[in-house]
Length: 188
Image (cartoon, rainbow, N blue to C red; front, top):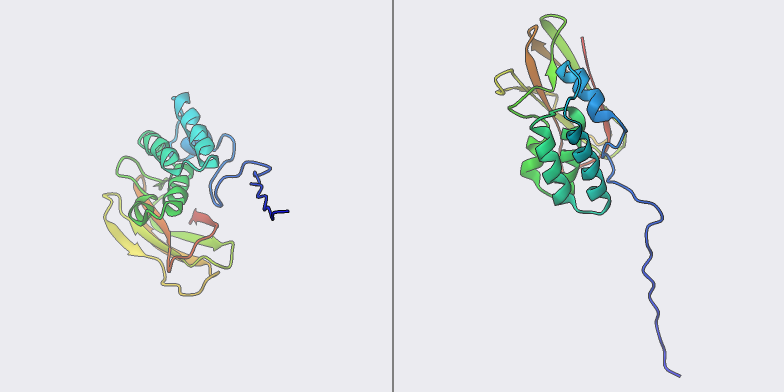
């Protein structure tokens, strides 16, 4: 009798996207209204956003990123940038990861209430992320950095000077090859 070894490939029981990837139904439409001040008119953008999620589940990260790169030119909202950042990180594309949170076309943050100091807080959810923050002025020039954290799991608070009716850009990134989910709060 010969010795035989049978190997069975296990299939995932349910489709999963990458950790940190935003899948909330209607998020593109909701964020577009919030950040752009009007309704999303192009329904095809939502279809592309959902198709990118499907590609991510199938582990076609480059295909998903290509779809989202098309979406972000017309709907530059946090969910799209977040998902691009997650995909770029998964593909180990550090150059794109650093640029995934801002775009020259439109701003992610529009100040309506007046000039003054604006607070930005990153709530660190896991104990592995070392968050970092870069801010950009309305002309997309670097206007500063958040505090230099060195401890995994620490949260970050930063204040920046803003002027009414201007767009500002915020780039959230990780230090030391760390990763993890976080919450971003911007307010007065």
